[in-house]
Amino acid sequence: MGKRAASSDEFNMAREIRNLLSTNKELTGREVLDQLRKKFPKQPLNENSCQVAFANARRKLGISTVRKRRPVGAGKKRATRTWSAPARSEAVTQAPAQGLELLLAARQLLQTCGGDAAAATAAIKQVAALQIQ
Image (cartoon, rainbow, N blue to C red):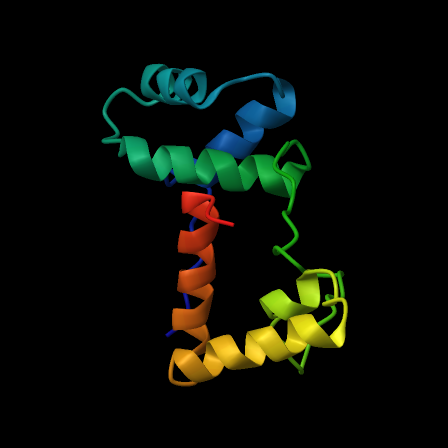
């Protein structure tokens, strides 16, 4: 259903607020509410409705200081990786082993540890901690 047109003699809070703001653009919401209560003492005024009408009137009159915020990430194109880099193993990060004798000793250690590289690494770390040579 459509709204009925308000006659000029009826109280229209939004229209009164626009009139007040067009005369003085520096008014605050509280000051507008106080002036409306002085001008229309018998009219019941809802404070929250008055504040909403005040904000809307400021926006319509172009007084608003509110800036529209851009959504986060809008306008930026972010590179998305569709592949995952291979995990770096300790062997890659360390210097390459020197000599065939060292590789054969590592192979023998792995065989002694039952093929478990974690156990062999733990044994090497224990030897380094004890400083046995």
